[in-house]
Image (cartoon, rainbow, N blue to C red; front, top):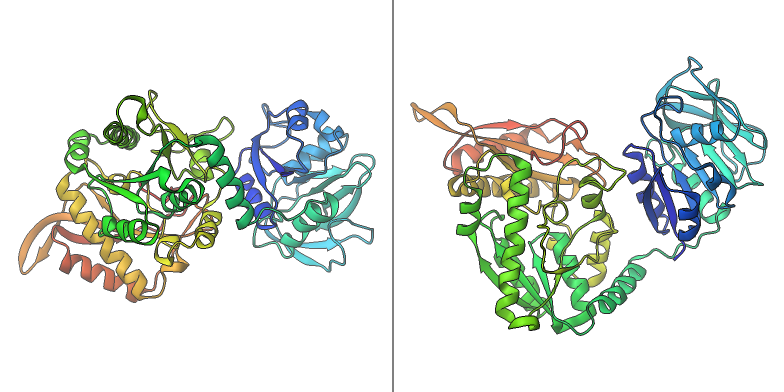
Length: 511
């Protein structure tokens, strides 16, 4: 499949561009700025995007692009930093013009022909830059300006294009139209990246990878593992055995929902491993969140290895393990061109001596793509649209040592939060809504007596893909109902707080 490479210059913009390209039904992949022209040529992409980034092209060091990439004849669209880099590397001039632009800015089309902006009126775009293109390289024509600044330039003969603004953000009017013009008109890429094509491609890949061998699937109750299991079931049917490991860190009623879906609806063999004691013993005294993730991740795998040994003697047991790893998991766990923000238990938390070969059919997908694939596969709405749940479960929502008591308090508190969010009709509007338990105690007064109990923090965010998120402005009456129920119904809780931190600077989960 001829897709798109998005060159990452060190900001969240690369992920957003990649998602917007996929929304136009074209496959996209994020690559580091260190990629060479030979590497690009070997991948044979249909187009290349140069993302925005936090640096100035004149900083030392600043991320650069192999100049030979511009000579490959592949359509290139530079965005913000990518636009300035293209201008500088091809002989133009980038400077501190004294005209920094941040936020919504008026975009005015120049009276010249444009491949990207056909019949555009004056519109609003989203800018975020300090430097600006002061002189365009030879062969380029300025096609749009913002007040005093080059906003877009094109060199159709070399198939090179640049925009100073961010067409990938929702604040830019007609941004999707511009991206579509570049992908479908300039690069002539067909819109073949669809739910059906994803399923067909992954089913074929799974069959080729596992052949006639048996496969284990790690089911957690979340949408990712559920869709992965459904895909593998479609590919190899009864060769699949699903395993639900009850770590003691799951949500209320998790096991019952999993059994109802996969044994009754899909007819999948399901093994329920009750491993609460082993997980709580392993987590005793552990406070550091990275250590928690690695402890949980390793023990998780050991449980599957034990199941595999029980299912077959010697080499006859399953050697393939299915996981619901997503593209953002890989990015956040560090991938050579992205910082390691946190280790996901199914990426950075895996033991080095893993005895399974991993099957990860969702590894290239964002969450919204996973949901659409799940719907196409016939999974029930309550699973497809279930809010994301971290692989380590409640273990990374307890800030401090994980104990049975704290896990049970948090499980009940989380149920209250989600229940009230659903009652208010907000569940599908929010990316995530859950409870956090900091392992500290606070003084309170209940029934004219002193209490010394745990606080619960309400965490609710809106997001498109979890790469960035904003704290949700929950109605006061909903917050009040949640707080009243937490204090009244959950033993061991005497205080409720609301987290109003966005991502960045925070992450969605507390650990």
